[in-house]
Length: 62
Image 1 (cartoon, helix red, strand yellow):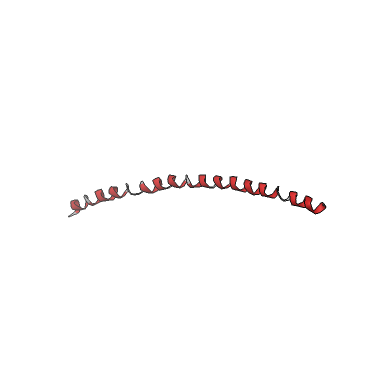
Image 2 (tube, helix red, strand yellow):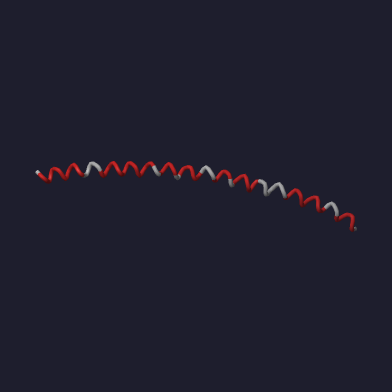
């Protein structure tokens, strides 16, 4: 009965290919950070909105 137990270990190596799929999912998360930098240009528009405010202040001097 002992020799019949040898074929069992062959099933273990088949489970190794599964872990290879996990690392492939990690690289896909890298493109996500690229979306963050795109949000930085947005704040630059808010700075332009503050410039038109000084104009109305001139009307008060009149």
